[in-house]
Image 1 (cartoon, rainbow, N blue to C red):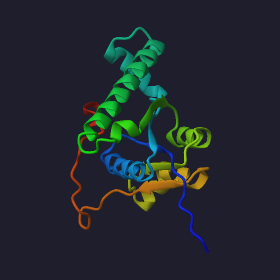
Image 2 (image 1 turned 90 degrees about the vertical axis):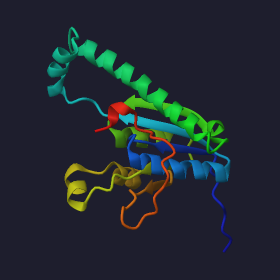
Image 3 (image 1 turned 120 degrees about the horizontal axis):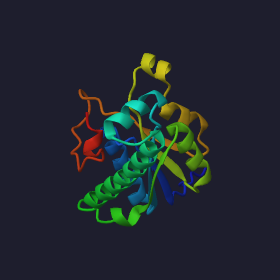
Length: 185
């Protein structure tokens, strides 16, 4: 049997801007280097639950819920795009070809699994790379798992990078933090 190397020219990298996303990004960049491929970075913002809107309107000083949503969402999307672009520029210090790999940055709102699957099916990508939060069985069962849903329904191959285990993993040098300061806890 002859084994054929898959053709990978465009990688979709889905990020939740977590520390594990940084680890998954390493894999996306490694694949891109190996295959001389482009990367599209995508982040999906989940909608704010409706019951928090009145509190935020009052706290942030907006006239109404519509003004809050319009201004906050647009501003946040721009901040995230800028952060991702800056992260890629910082990565270029260690990997000079990295800026050449970045084809696009997509930031939009919606349900993460649905939006990731939509782009995977319509974006002419060859592989999807994403991290896994590493939720325990009970928590994943109760809350659902974005990576599990994507793995089950994706029309393209998916590489899910698990969280590094503290006890048995090598300490991976952190090139940069993909998560901007406003996402830190």
